[in-house]
Length: 271
Image (tube, rainbow, N blue to C red; front, top):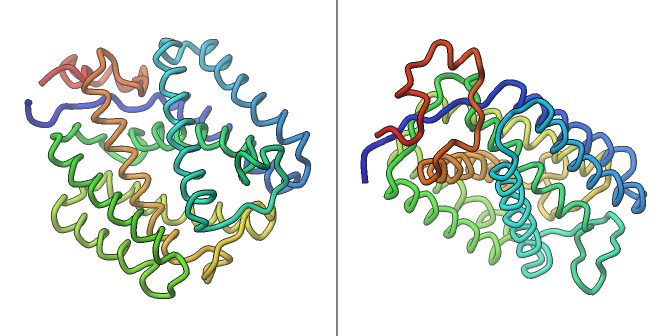
């Protein structure tokens, strides 16, 4: 395996599209969480419209984009189901058609795909600075080990005022010391803490979407505040490493970036 490989930054139009999609659904959550029929129609419609706009703007090939969006949805939905329904870490208050299958609204499971797709676009945006190189597999394995340890911890100690968040704090220190996050990582983590926590507060206090125990930050527990930057950085690493295994990057290169980049710096297959 070669050393780090360069990546292509997200097209600003793709980032704007994904941000607009998340904002649109977030507004709907704040004003219509209790309207099950509306939300069940609105969220799938937003997803379809996003794909249509993606194609109209020619932001990238449709097949890889649909595949990435499907992966985002499956991973996001499984993580939420595993956390909520299997381990009871928190609960949803919004109505759902899925009683007997899941206590999570089915539209929310779908929305997780749009959220993770937005995070992928944001993670590789040059707006946060120079996009870093793809990393070696050993780095990804260490990161996934930290995720596994913290997830197993929260499944056991989510209601403990100390043990719920201390593993996340320890993992953050280990990440900083062992993995040495670059400037892009630090900006992304800071954005995740602020934006992720603020959105959760809105969903809880305004939308009444869900409820945590130990919610000391506007209804958000400290472990969630610490989980947001880790989750975003993990997804950045996973998507970035996945791009090295594909002929083209899942993040479309901005035309303005192409004009100032060398061909070697634009190709994820270049070692």
